[in-house]
Length: 252
Image (cartoon, rainbow, N blue to C red; front, top):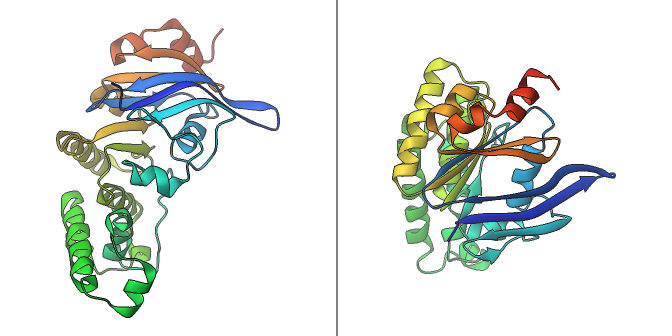
């Protein structure tokens, strides 16, 4: 059974179809990429899957369960997490505190229990901090745990967001242009981190404009153009597809 399955998913804005009849599957343990020119509907598709937007039609299923129309926090609870094109951090909070936010779905204490510091609350908070710190170790930022997130460089902010997404313990991790704005060394580090994440049993779905990165790490690729899927398959097959070549070279 597919981990994630989309069937005929559609979304329009003001009569313009941003995502139009998109269907695809992501298998457990797979690294799958979604590519296409600017305006192809890639981020809109991510927003539909992660609950930021609701689809106009079609079905989105995760582990056989329909999740189309669920709120983002509900989708995170079933095992799906994501990052964004531009890192979205709480800049006045520490790096560690930002990652701790990602542990909310593992928390068993309600608001009143936290406020009154009921039995077990301190123990749970220690567990949350330890789990968040381990994710920072994983991405190589443990030494910056107490630094304010606002003081980090752009590439470091990307890593904090990745650590926070991993802190939710996702089965499927969605990465929206994770290599954007990174220099060569940071890109190499990212590729290594994605590989290690997959080896820990996390399925990866990513949007990326860096074609060399996509071809290096992806096992399957979906190509969108003006919201429509125009090709899907292994990297070598997609790379040689005449429709894909035409879209990227701007020829008829």
